[in-house]
Image (cartoon, rainbow, N blue to C red; front, side, top):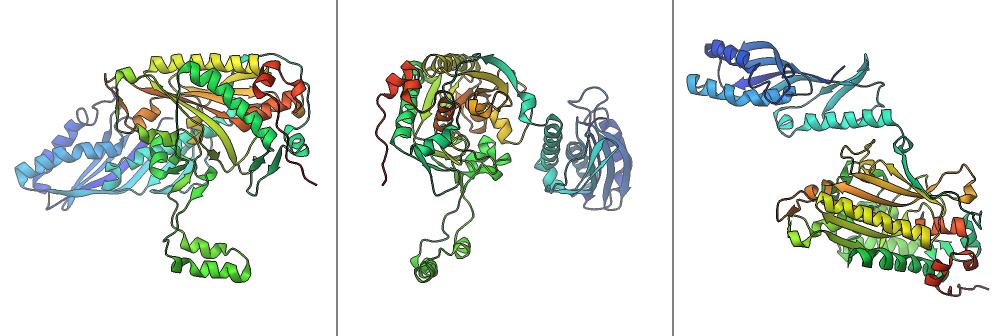
Amino acid sequence: MELQFRIKGMFRTSTDPGPAKDEVLELLENARTTILSKGAPEGKGANITSVVVKDNGIELEITSGRFVRVHDAMLRLRKPLAELLGKGHRIGIRGIDIAEYTVTIPSEKPLKPLKIPYVSSMEYTDGAIVLSLDVGESEIEKRIPDRIITLIEDKVAAQSYGGKGEHWNLLWESGKKEHVFNEDPTQEMMKQGWIKRGSSRGQWIHGPQSVAVFRAFERIVIEEIVKPLGYREMIFPKLVTWDVWQRSGHAKGVYPEIYYVCPPKTRDPEFWEEVADHYKVTLEVPLDMIAEKIDKPIGGLCYAQCPPFWPFLQGETMPDDGLPLYVFDRSGTSHRYESGGIHGMERVDEFHRIELVFLGTPEQVVAHSEAMQERYMHIFNDILDLEWRTAWVTPWFMAQEGLAGLATETRVGTIDYEAVMPYRGEEGEWLEFQNMSVNGDKYPKGFNVKCQSNQELWSGCSGIGLERWASAFYAQKGLEPDGWPDAFREIVGELPEGIRFL
C-alpha cells in the first residue's frame, strides 16, 4: 500500500459560474496531464475524480499519491481558474472551502491515541492509518498537511525501528583489559568524601579530589585536542530561548527533558509582597502563589550545548579563508531532566561538559571528524588506558527530535564512545561516555549561515562530559592514584586533601 490522499473541496465564486461551465470542464480535463502531473513521475500526478459546477462555486473531488498531493492540486488550480473566470466572465474566486480531507498512511500496526492539531480523527484499518484533517485554505497554504504527514510517518518509522540498539553498529573496540576495581564508583566516591548529593535531583557537589580529576581531564582536552586542532574558546549562553530551539530542531521533541525558565510577570516589589509576607509568617515558600506570578517559559536551561552558539553566526556570510572554524565552550553546566534514568554520577540532571563545534565545507568537516577520532583514540588508549569501543548510532540530533534510524547522508551521523563498567558484570550495559557527530547542513541551514564562495556548509560537534569520563575511568581504575596509568597520574599530580568533618 502507498500513501493516499483524497480531498473534497470547492472554489467559492462571486456569482454563479454556470455560464463558464464548459470552459471550466475543459480546463480541468486538460489539467490532468499538465498542471496536476508536473513534477511527478509518469502516471503519479493528482487525479480529478468528480466536478460539480454549482451556483456558488466549483466543487471538486481529487485523489493522489505522494506526488502532487491533493492540497497542492487545489492550490495549482486556483490561479488558472481565477484567470479563466475573471477575464472571460467577470467572476471572481472568493476562496477555497474544504469539506473532506482524508489521508491513508501505510503502517504495520496502529499508533497509540494522539492529539495532533487539525486531525479530527485517526483510525487504523486494513494495514493503514486513516487521518481526517480539519483544514482550510490558510492551512494548506502554510503546508500544515505536509507537516502532519511527516509527523505521522516519523512516528510509524520510530515504532517499527524500536530502540536505539537496533541502530548500533560496532566500528572499533580496544579488546579486553585488566581492571583493578569492580565497585560502583559513585558509592565509593561518596564513601571517601569526594562528592555529596546536591539539594536538587540529579545534582552533585564535587569536593577537591573530584575537581582535581575534572581539571586534569580539561587539561588533556586542551593539550591533546584544542591546541593541536586549532580551537578557540568562546562562552555560549546557558539559557536557551525558543527561537534557537526552533532553528536547531529541538523544538520538535525536547519538552520532556528540559528545565524550563520562567521570568517574573513584573519586578514590582508590591506585586510580590504577599509572597514574601507569606514566607515571613509561615516559613514556607508558597509555590502555588509563585506559580501565579511567573510568566510563560521563555525557554530552558542549556540542554544540548551547541545550539545557543549558532545565533553568533546567524545570517552571516563566512569568508572562505575563515574556514574551517573550530570553537569550544566550557563555561557552565548543562541540564536535562533524566526522569527515571538517574544513576549515581553517570546519569545526572546537572552536568559539566566541554563542547567542541566545527564548521566548514563537507570535505573539511569530515576530515576534521577523522582527525578528532584519532585524538580521542590517543587519549583513551595512551593516557587513560580504558577498555572502550565505538559504534555508529542514530544521530544525536535525530534522537533528540524523536526520530529513529540513521541519517540518509552516509557521512552524517554520530559515533558513540562506550566504556565497559566492571561493577555491572560481564554482560552489563556499557556506558556511553563520549560522542562525536557530523551534523551535515542542519545548523548552517537552520541559522542561515552562508559561505563567501557559495559552497555548501556543514558542521559537527563533540560533547565531552566530565562526569561521564570520570565514571568510566573510576569504574575501571578505581579511586587510588597508585592504580592509575602513569601518563594520567602525571597530569593529575598530587590530589588535594579532602574536606574533613568531626
